[in-house]
Image (cartoon, rainbow, N blue to C red):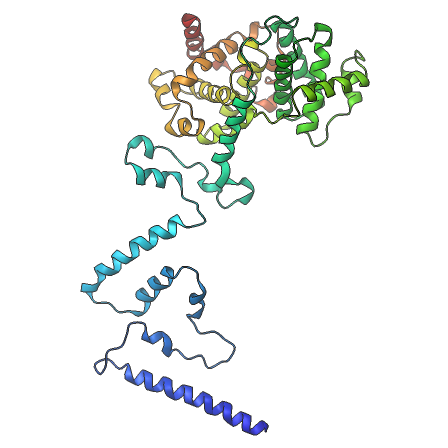
Length: 409
């Protein structure tokens, strides 16, 4: 029985080889015309269990990708037939690009819609991050759109301290002290920004805080922000110690419950630092520009007249001023500071940013004369590139910008 099976198998193989020999004889040029794809079926695989050479291409989902290589590889086309082949390739390339994981660079869309020079100047800053899934570059624009909706959902009104016992000067003293506490605890940058945001939102909603409990509000706000941002937040006993035992643990916990209830457990309001990182990437900022912009933002935290601006607008004004200061003294240079790419990703025009830039410039010019020196001393350290001691802050460029604000008022 085993011998019969062997004979049957060998007979089948011989029949297949005979068929292939006949087909190759029929394909001799000059005798008969065969289809261009006919040679694919004539390739014999003598080993069982191994797939033919081109059979893997049949498993591909996109059948258009199969047509292009077969025509280019196996079909010797005459010169007169080259034009139709080029017409077929073009739409295939377009559909391949548009269906490649739904990732289409922004400049490609702009080129299709219009040939305006302004639209072509917008760069796709997320193009290099497509290969890194942890950066979720596909959803970057949608994420920042959502953060802008949160800005409008949790606003801070201008002059919210009107009619309260707490004055803007008390607020500035509190935040200046919290900057020192933030450094002593070695907390993250986001913790400081979130602390100030919690203080402003709470004082805006709960208007019966007196000056004796204002420091308690500040300490509790940093305690909550540490839980929200830090991986290892300081213990409540550390905050009791930092206040020189002015408040007990029970008082801090009671104030924490009050703040959380008043703010309805909502601490997701975006911070200026979130938008600054995006704008620094869009403007191709160097480390000196980014650090200087952070210095401007922290100086703005202590000033009551700046708290009502949205975080995205503050970040845009800070990076704008950093680009202007580190540039040349030529006034025409300012035309190229706020590029179309920055305007696209920030959603702010140059005219929207300039009023806030002028207010920040006036704060920086008078920073050495201010009573609140915590931020200035912080950024005089070498790890912050000694930004606050730079001679550019006394240059005619920033002085002229600050003077323009006074003339407008």
